[in-house]
Image (cartoon, rainbow, N blue to C red; front, side, top):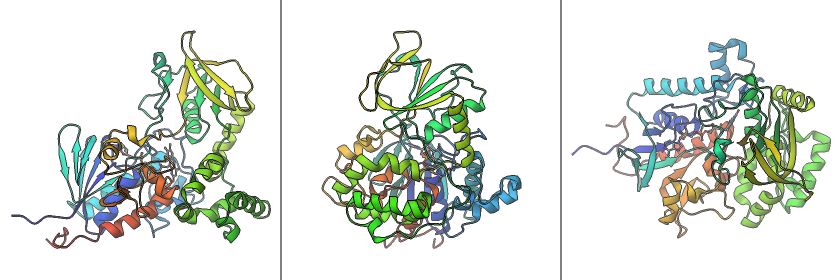
Length: 446
Ligand SMILES: Cc1cc2nc3c(=O)[nH]c(=O)nc-3n(C[C@H](O)[C@H](O)[C@H](O)COP(=O)(O)OP(=O)(O)OC[C@H]3O[C@@H](n4cnc5c(N)ncnc54)[C@H](O)[C@@H]3O)c2cc1C
């Protein structure tokens, strides 16, 4: 009988899954990398062909490899010297190419350690992944790196005028150059949609509605040096921490305060109890998001210009039902503060309200929850995980062989969405997965 080889099944071949597979291969661990799209590396964020869609993190912080901070900048220097400004914001499509090349290079250097599988993972049974077409990927451990679930618009299709998954291929194709649009949400996805429409020659108007009407803030012209977090910022009541953040911001600048918090955010989240987490999510989250997930100064200027020209309006309010009985579409809404306002009329509604947060409804996560192998976290952010990203079951036990990486691990780490944060999680995961159980051979020891 042949020896078993230690192998990790990774569901999702975006940045998280593909870069995990690469690091595992470099550490002599084999993986089967499963992605439904057939593309391995770019994932959702870096598949866009539009040059106007630029990174919202400076190039010198976007290395895919922990410990090699200049990796992406060097790649730009070699392939796109005109875009190789370390402090600049490169097109996301170039970053996608960089990821594909890194994966291909590792595959060439360590042949046979990464098996790519194009298909939809449908069921996780123990450490086996069953695909929707019946194929089976067997492994010794499973990592779920499935990215953010698509947003879900309440209600039905509304005559096809509600674009509930703005990331779907061709989602915006039916929007005419002069059509007006309503956008639900005013965060990074809204920004992407407006820029994407503009790049296609769109001349219409957009009204974006979100609960607080906040737009992502801009990066400064250069990287802001982090402020060392004070004990008052990192401990005690949330309201006192906020007061301290405001105090520091007035003297040192809010961006520097956010930069100082960045490396310790996951630790602060892990330390926080359920009540603190719930309070943070209820009161601070929208403010945290717009200050933490910033856009490039150039993109911010473009949005300012659109707002100045009356082509983009961002309003605060609660979204109600959609009515398509009239020509076009009408969105009922209540402005923040409870005033009454007539419905917003438009040709289209684009749902940019952010990822759907109902893991129980997810075809892959739902059965894990229903079977008791996984459970939801108390804050309702996603699967409950331990401090290493391992799934916690209904009985409170940790599943050594089932881990979550990237945005779906939000419940455990809160900030696990951007490359610098995921890169760190990948290293931690590799350290754990590279320690094989006794009796299992690695590829090199065969
Ligand atoms: C528009 C956008 C722009 C961003 N820009 C930046 C940026 O500039 N800098 C930054 O640091 N971060 C940015 N981010 C954050 C981004 O989330 C991360 O950088 C990173 O791309 C996350 O990668 P991921 O692999 O976890 O998720 P994804 O890229 O979403 O990849 C998940 C993959 O899983 C696959 N998949 C899901 N379910 C299944 C299944 N059941 N079976 C098979 N395959 C499946 C999908 O096909 C997909 O390819 C951006 C995010 C978005 C959405």
